[in-house]
Amino acid sequence: MNEIAQELNSQIQKENPHVYDLLSDLGKNLYFPKGILTQTAEAKQKAHRFDATIGIATEHNRPMFLPVIQDTLPDYDPKNLYPYAPPAGKPELRQLWRKKMLNENPSLKDKSFSNPIVTNALTHGLSIVADLFLNENDPLVLPDKLWGNYNLIFGVRRGAKNIVYPFYTEQGTFNTKGLKDALLSQKDHGKALVLLNFPNNPTGYTPSEQEASEIVEVLREVAQLGMNLVVVTDDAYFGLFYENSIKESMFARIADLHPRILAIKVDGATKEDFVWGFRVGFITFASKYQTVLNALENKALGCIRGTISSASHPSQSFVLNALQSSEFQAQRNEKFELLKNRAVQVKQILNLGIYNDAWDYYPFNSGYFMCLKLKQGVKAEALRLHLLDQYGVGVISLGESDVRVAFSCVEEQELKQLFDLIYQGFQDMKAQRL
Image 1: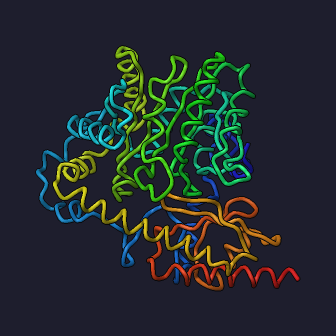
Image 2: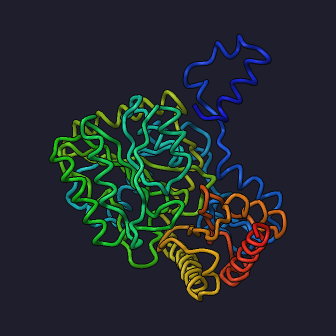
């Protein structure tokens, strides 16, 4: 049990043990993690110069947005705002998202997959996957560079057993051998849930064409050995591919790959279309058999009905209207180029060599983030707190030595100053250790 959960339980037991006795096993295991959200809350209070913490994109000191959404908000018919939306979501939105998936993932042509079901953003979609496919101690295969909320969604709530492999090889490529070894270590269990998150949070890395082909082949080989696999693509940052990577979702390559493999795509407008607070996501199943797709859809709807009943109708209407607009793609491309320029600028700054004594950086080519690997024994959490207190700079500490920087939140012309301040903070910490 997590130590934070233990502390909460102790507080309840001390004041009223009867309340503790009322808690379910899940209730006793639940806690609010001191992870990214806690660090982000601290940054909001102290990061007066740069807040490079949370997974949104900003522009001119306010959230990035598409005018095709912002400028039309006062014009909606009440019928598209106030009634309940269907549990599966607005039918026209589901159909349009499916069409978008096909346009952006040519490999899906001639593949059999369900209409996307609307979820309350990606966390909810991943939670549906966990409820449908994980029993206690079922293996969850995922890399060591991961979004911390997976631990709550799959571990605390469903009791999954994390089987972790190194994300990168020593050469800085995706570790397909590590993935294969992790899967085969669970062969006797007979099943596993595999989580693929590209562009990756926190590293901002997406596999190359060769690496993607190797991943597909690993999954095929493991299935042929008799292991059943649920392969989930967490496509939160889909489309933000800047250089040297695949430009499709891995879902398109895995759909219909093998009878023992069930591919599931979890995605949404949240980060793709810069509408984080709208909470519009989707879950899509792939199967050659329409009866299987129908059954899985109904089971997913049972999860939705038994938890949130249905997702927000206004948010769905806003996203639907944007997707239907002739201006949508041009506006989205404009924001894409802005984020791509920031990513390229970060790489150019880091490649100057002026910070080489302080850190290496993990390969990145996509998404909102990149990660530094600190040197000389400087601890990531100590550096994070020092940067907040002394320089008003917010970053995210991950483990002993990794620091995540959200370049999505920093203007291009200010990136050099950001890394200079991080470097200065590193030098301060190093001096304290001497």
